[in-house]
Length: 303
Image (cartoon, rainbow, N blue to C red; front, top):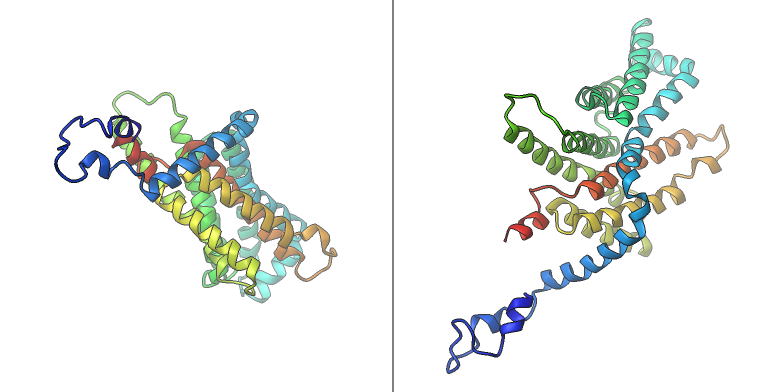
């Protein structure tokens, strides 16, 4: 664009001085998309300067936040062991013995896999185990048809896919004979899938609760950011925007620490709080890695 503006008005190129506005003049004025890109680029540069001290730690923070909901869930099962057994036996009608096995496997899988994710060791197996936990808990606790639970866990799944992409990005060595292009393509597809799934939590937030003016404004702003994340247009900026919105919402709405220990909604608020932290972790990995090749930002670099 700068080159076009620099030659405009000097009859350079194929411009005809006796005809109407040439192609250079037609492209002189920036499109609305270019104007938005220019403004968001300035904000991104400003955010880069502010976040520079924490950039080296951003992947570790993101991975920890993604699995923190699994660690909290494992701790909750251990501390509420008898209540968990009673619910599975009396309400889900799971036979005695299988209830113990179900809880033990879940605790071991969540704890060990979360540690592996944080340590960046065997990420593929760790993510597969955590995805298995999400599915088995949905079936075991009878939440598979709960829309809110479904949307939240889609977002958690998106965060886990971002963990896989991050682990593939960081691989420095591949065994001889393995096709490199396949790994690259796999990373691109998983980045796209993770990016898309991350936004489902916000969709659930938009369509639940009472409508107020503030809620409408936050929902509109968040939906715009979600669309930008999905298509990969200024994905880092929009991911930061969602991180801020979700963090404020989490602190104000899911403040489980302010509730009485025996309050009926305390466990639900605590569960929601840590699940949102997991989605925030996935968004932080998106900020660190970028949207990948299937994005408007990447296509802009090509053209």
